[in-house]
Length: 325
Image: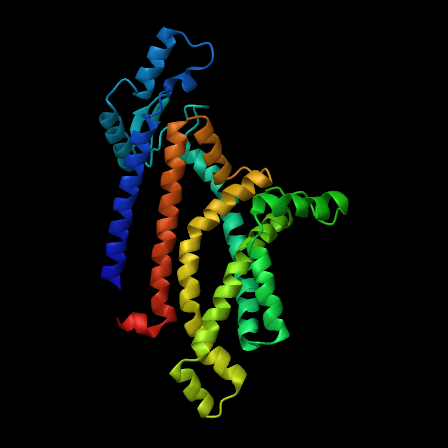
């Protein structure tokens, strides 16, 4: 297991280097000079030259990239003073430290991802396994048909409808907002209820279908049929023998969906006007802000890769066959 984790960590490091290099060099393929953004509207040639020098844009692109990578590991001197590691630079648009900005925005995005995942896992797995337990019944048909309908919805379509129905028309819920959980847990929860519900609705459909098919497949395994032949009750066999094995494909899909959750967070933040990592990424791309764009991409990629390593490690605790291999 330790060797496996070391290999995965080394592979993740190579992927991050590749992502950063591709993003960095592609950015400079854009015709517009990135220094113009930092220079402002009334920029003179002399002022533009000063900005070029302060930002290091007067050096060859490979040299700039090397300084950027070294800064992540060791820190570097940039415009405005020394930037401690991990130094992702300063924004061309507002001069703010990229790492600090990302850390300020990430708690909102993490709250959306974790809260949405908890909701759709509980609802999706519960509905899917109930449908599998009552295969062929009216309950199975309702859950299976409902998952097909939900899978066709999108966050940017469903979100405004939910706000109109539950906030504007009835006033039952608060307008989506974000309050740090350390400041006011109640306000944190109430402000994110609607985004969680909308995100969970989109993902619940997939996990309902997946858990249903996985559970039905597990119920046909030899060890499950042997347990039934010994006279064990159906609920005991269902939860003791079949349920654990059915989690393997669910965990696999969840590891893959971490990126989709982050992408869903982007759409959710824009839909509900929440200032998280997703909205920061969109704004930095529109503004052609290289340090912020690259910093968000590296941070998001590292987070996704780390979560996938954790998911792979969880296989050993779910399935003993993986542990032995």
